[in-house]
Image (cartoon, rainbow, N blue to C red):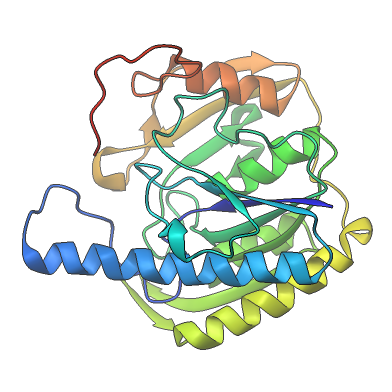
Length: 271
């Protein structure tokens, strides 16, 4: 069994504020490192649970921001990790094909969701007949490949979205959002325990959880704004394709900040 773990940072227990990569202060440095540690611990709980459920292969995708957030030297050595410059390889979800299940850790609510921790990215499908967060977009892309999304963690709003769209999914709300920047969080050790238990349960039930499929053809656009503050507007005009996966890739490749299928260095310097 191959398990793919998609990760983000905004949905981990203890995270309340958008990341500020421009602040060089000592306080901000230590805060960011602390959030990375919390993310790493939740991801590691999911990795260990996947192997406990019988996985032969576990692949972690470090998908937040720079793509270099997880303290990977602390992860269970049986897994592998995709990290580095996001959207410079073949896909937003590289090497997903061939997986038996998708696990999502640290997800955040879609842009514009009231009383949710740092909501952003609102995918508008078919003129607004359906809206997706980054997390449910990943589930839909996996669904096109016949891969079920079996687990999600994040705040109470993102877990509610997943349960509405995929009722059989295992979901752990590691925090209750009180405002966009305040939450009542589980203590990280407890969050890790629940994540581990639910990931293992979801993987054992994976054949009972149908892949999340969105019928085509699909019209797709992304709404967001500077600093993710409403009103949210279309980033680019909509695109139409036979599947959500095709529409997503066409749209993403047209974005000015992506460099998919990069073959030779282009001068990029981390971070």
